[in-house]
Length: 319
Image 1 (cartoon, one colour):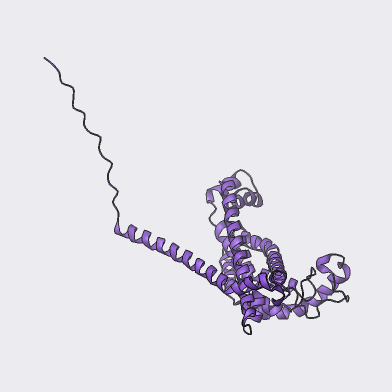
Image 2 (tube, rainbow, N blue to C red; image 1 turned 45 degrees about the vertical axis):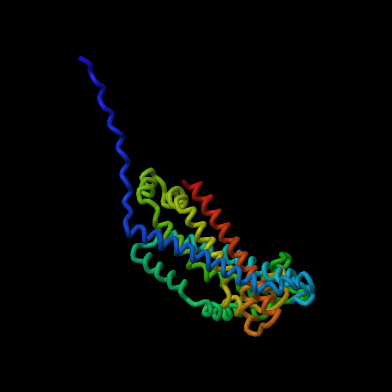
């Protein structure tokens, strides 16, 4: 009797994915939000470029009609002043921000840590004009310190007195503005670093302590490596805030030419230059200020791109 081969059953088709209405709506909403952000960014860039076109055209035809004898000669000192003030503020604020964040998360008593966190958050909510007023009062008290720096450390270019041997008698210098900026960005960097450090797995900390590590060794081996990318993000966000700060810097800095010394009058930032001259500007002068704003827009974009690259690099190292 002949035997028949068993019939092969066709493979079961994979189940179809069920598309839920809520997921579809949420996906469409997030996609629309991303597109709107890109459109707004492109719109701002096009507006700045369009309004800056008279200066771009004049730069190629008659550069002498632009303030300072040409756009690049005009904007270069502003770029230098912006970068110098922002980086000094970052150098001053970062160690304090990291120390405060570590203290509130791993050192402070449990009852004190929340209070310190609330105080730091309140500092971030203070308007910049209040910091500017405080900076004007601080500037007068810094004059004796600047005199001492110019007298004993004047051989260093950043503390050198002016050509006539004097320093700013009002204290409204680039160093004062940088110190105020450091205090302004300190709460932002501290809050972000604190939130990052709080995400450290508790098991990693307890394992380090169980192996005999001291508290500082536990922080250096378990906490800081885990939060490296977040700390880098917080620092770069603080840098972005320092680059774009306007009112406080505009209230503190006095007009003057670019100088390497931080204790004499002079130096301007892009934001303060716009804030001080925009109300009375018209015609080509208005286009100059808008073109300076375009330069600040480009600098901020470059900083953000660099921040993304740094965070991505530190994330790879930390993984």
